[in-house]
Image 1 (cartoon, rainbow, N blue to C red):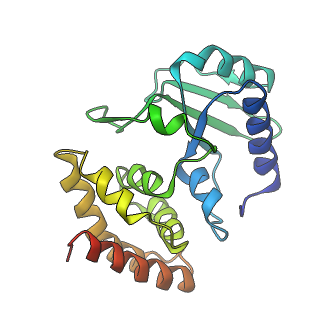
Image 2 (cartoon, rainbow, N blue to C red):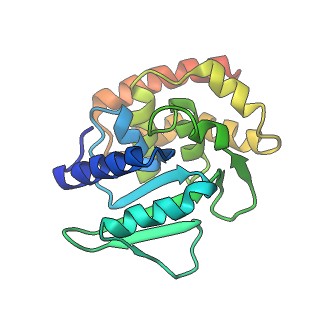
Length: 209
């Protein structure tokens, strides 16, 4: 992962503590992309992860032991942990499912959270990213994820079929993504070219123009 050493050390410590208690988590968001992309260098102080609701108590104990406080402010996420030393970090935890920012749609992810590994598979990371606005940060993340060349197209197509009316929204965003990538000045030329080439194959597989 191309990530500052302090945050990388923090992620490794979280994984170590999670493994000690045999808990299940899955990183996603920008941090999730960093697990796959060797060149993703966008800075972030947010760590997004999924966990199982029945392990909530253990999770709280782990983060408290690591110096985190629990945010009592009403937020979109089920649990929010934060600390300011030695540097600012915020951890957003979703329990059992992914939900959109407006809470009008959610996806049960329990079976995926229980699988081996600590990061969502590429196709699910792609889908959860596409539910967010296609702003410069998210387009940067998507380009770096796609450029790694492992979009798991068959799994992507199968999962899209389970999204009901929301499938149309995701397909439209995939159609709009090439133009967004081209206009994003922060994405390196090589990453742009690779992601656009792979995205072309994804669109062809999904019968998109």
